[in-house]
Image (cartoon, rainbow, N blue to C red; front, top):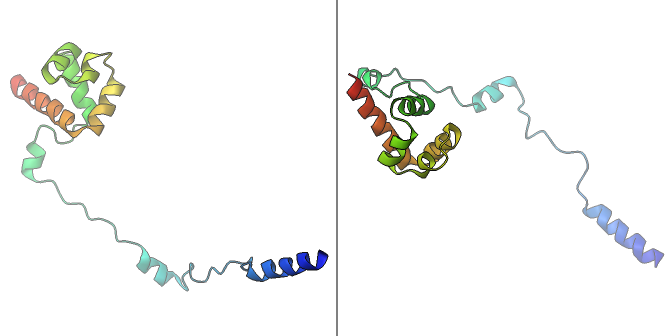
Length: 121
């Protein structure tokens, strides 16, 4: 039995990969090659006049929701939009999470905000 075990060990030793990894393909030869592999920085465009004049420009969703709750209250938001996170146990955290995940709900809230801004003018 010892002979069979020795032969099996020799076979498995032959099939094992070398323990020293070959990193030559991962490391570039010089710094010029490493600079060429990096993507270029994204160039930001300037905002147009129409974008700057839009009431939602630069306003975060949290600010929108805070202003709506301060102006209308949770009950009105729940009645007007029929969104459960405004009706049952409304909190800022749960509402923001739902609005960030759900595009149609966010659009409704943004429309309400736009109406509120027009009313205030």
